[in-house]
Image (tube, rainbow over all chains, first blue to last red; front, side):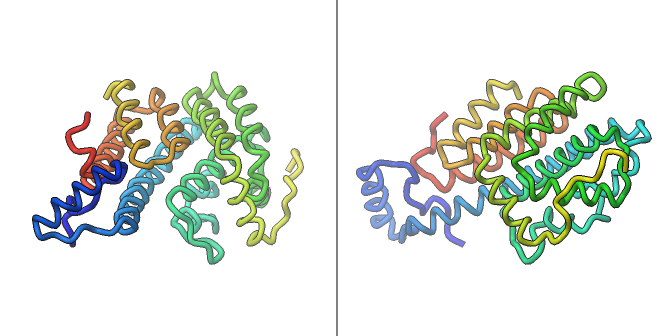
Length: 206
Length: 63
């Protein structure tokens, strides 16, 4: 493996880069090509983002557990993809779903949208959702990414007294999704292509 | 880590090519994270910065 210091300056001027290459020639080292440096930087970032996906999943689980005392939320635990393995969509969080390979950034987007989106829908249903209804809600969430931020904001408002920490994550996730609207729309398109189930929400009285 | 220090850390990562929207998201969550979660986040970001700086010799010694 090549010493990272054999890489040229990433954001240096042409003069800085020339000096770097000259120094490396004198040292008898072959500098790494720019594209290799870029690839290595991307790999470092991808690895770090992967760590943050895991952290987000832990945080989501911790905030959900604040709601577990309310029996209405107990039944959903095994179905929210970042929490339980029961759901088929858990595969997407691990980076593979329906033949798609997701980057760490996309996995974070997925985890944020689905965990918070589903939780917020459920809060609007007052927890009165059957397992089948919940699967339908997850499908709806995946293919209707553009609807999630508004629902998150509404849910955050409803939950801010009862579970303030979850409400703040919901609100921050809504802001994040609005800033990255295009990426979430693409993710929604990907899932729309592989999700054969209904994209309607279950009726309120399920 | 104080939030100010986290902001500085994030500013350095952005300069090295990190995703602004994602790091702003974490910054907005920071105050509401438990201490252990805050430590895990800052360790992740510090580790990433250290590795990226090693890949970018021009940034050595910058604070």
